[in-house]
Length: 115
Length: 112
Image 1 (cartoon, rainbow over the protein chains, first blue to last red):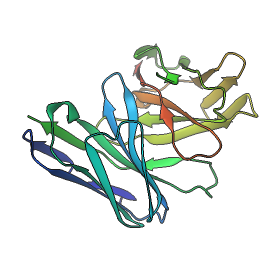
Image 2 (cartoon, rainbow over the protein chains, first blue to last red):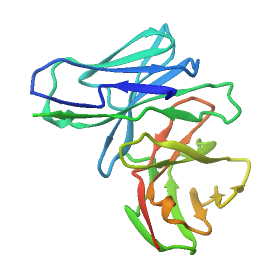
Image 3 (cartoon, rainbow over the protein chains, first blue to last red):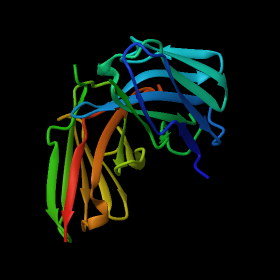
């Protein structure tokens, strides 16, 4: 079984709809992240959480919100989706006490299309 | 402002030859650098890393070189194999802050 799972894997929605992307992990890591990938821009950080009570904005948080329901679960919401939020979304986890500092482990991604 | 840059969007190499992927950064506070590899329809996977106190780190066919004065790092793959065809991202952070700053990625194609 995959250590970091994301649901759904693909989603097509319409402008103005509310969308939630979910991430679950079995790695036991405290730190979780949400990124989006756009062609030519690499991965950009949306939000991150270092523990259940800690939520921080990343580079591009406008238009997004998150919820850390438990150590293992971190959800990303688009309250009112717009077409320029069409992208590939990745969840990641890390363990600051791990052998390799700051190595992040990524889920398989969610491809979101906003029409 | 792109703090980590990969200026080559793509690279094509013959099987068995060396692949060299380059990455430049602007923030002198970065003290840890990582390379990730990404296949289509999968998430990025960690490949190799280097601390700023070193100038080279090697793992099998993969070697990362760091030139701090030039704010430049490179990933060497020798010999290149068709299975190495993927998008490669370099990333950096500082002070074990947890947040990674990624470059735009370079798509490597290794031809048989």
